[in-house]
Length: 170
Length: 268
Image (cartoon, rainbow over all chains, first blue to last red; front, top):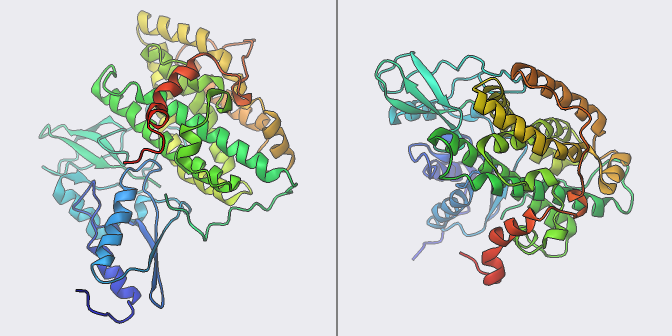
């Protein structure tokens, strides 16, 4: 039985959202990733605005369901989830804690300021990415396209380990 | 499917009474184009020449599919007749599809797929750069999102054209053959249909002349580096944007729409 709860506060909602993890990179919360753009409480009605990382991100429906379930378990039933495209998601919104968690998990975090951007640097130098395992800076890009849309595929030239790099997307 | 009620979708340019219908048709054309190319690329999944390029094509397909969904959702909203994104994708026949002929062309060999992608990316990327600052807020939002992804695509296909053109005798022979087969479909992309002309006149769409110049500059840059001659005076095919398709689209849709046609309304 769910006890009657006082009207939720925005602060409480943010705390609950911190407990919702990204289904494809479960070490990150959706707040670490910068997916949640706004929380608004109007009486008993709760509005959460989320934005996709990449257009085709197959995790968006799962994330919306997870948010709904987490809030429901606290007795919050009047939930509205809004999907916002603009401003477009960028890795600049990823938290510092999130970046550290990623590296500890074995995924190199984004190197800021290295997005493909709008200058087509054909065959340009690869972004220098630190190996998340042995911390060597001697690594090379294998492919811009990795195991998910948000990652590139790298290999370390020292420990030879292949690893995922969370692409800078700005 | 989620839509944001705070996102204004009404436009501020010189609207005429026909504008919402024209915008619906145009957004549907963009949706069909992204979906059909995504489907073609997804046919490579598990068949790529090497694992990394197999993944690259699947990734690009996924980006385009996501972009297509955004357009279909918006088209459904513009139409306002209760059709959903799924109805628009799965329950329209080939003559109702509005994609240009290029994207429905079969994959052929890897060089053909690369060349088709290169022609499309050069157009897509430069179009999105314009659309993202256009007067329609929702179209601009989708373009702002998608152009970041299109930047990866055009870099990938451009580098491959250079590798193939300036590669081995065999890779060059194949990419030259692909140019001979596919260049005839490049012109349709920047030849405005009646709908596009009307939207250009109303200020909703950019003039394609400027986009064509940017495309040409990119093609020259890449082909020079690839040591390939830039095609000149090619007779351009068109018709897809008016619903006159090659025979290939019917077969593609038969596969893409199979489940909804066989089990109407099926969900999972």
